[in-house]
Length: 225
Ligand SMILES: Nc1nc2c(c(=O)[nH]1)N[C@H]1C(S)=C(S)[C@@H](COP(=O)(O)O)O[C@H]1N2
Ligand SMILES: [Mo]
Image (tube, rainbow, N blue to C red; front, side):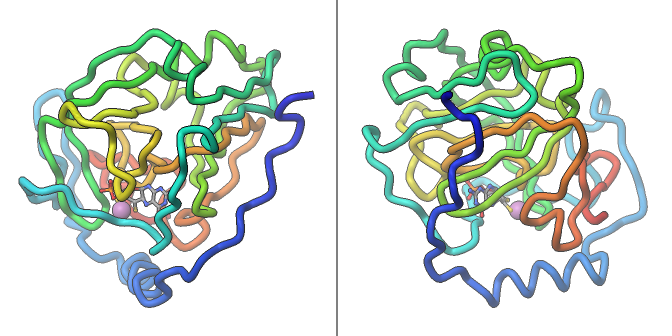
């Protein structure tokens, strides 16, 4: 059966151990916490964030080089219909344009990103999560993972992106396909997405196991767990 169990984690290249240690330390120290909250309906900028015009690159130091032929996205776990999309099948889904802001836990925010991709709700309609499904674990081609409540992807503004600012998404930003969850800190937006498991209970992903918050709402400063 397709996607019966998640594929094995790919061999890790050399991760940037120094950067990972630094970010673990930030979680320990509660770096950048202002102790305030904001209302996303009124305050475009979440507390403690500064606006940048460029698009910083943040990852574990491994940037998988995937041909479109090699790329696929599989979905399994607590769903009625597991699936596996090839690139052509993915591009055959209804395509949607998005405009959103992104907020990284390292305190940069970037406004007005234009994207094209496939709505998460298109995927949800096809896999049909079982009533027991409450959380997702998203896995990527660099060995990265992140957990997200199902309610946080069952929204109109969450999608799988292949185009940014009118061009195919660069490899360094997660091309060919990344998840985008604009209302949560950007570490939840997995680059080089490979697999999604629907789960009945929450489990920490890569950064969540290293001190980062299980949900990550920027307006509540859910930076660390
Ligand atoms: N697969 C994968 N996705 C990832 C990461 C990663 O290391 N691997 N880093 C996360 C973090 S911490 C951030 S802030 C954003 C950065 O995305 P960008 O490099 O496009 O700015 O990707 C997120 N998605
Ligand atoms: Mo990040």
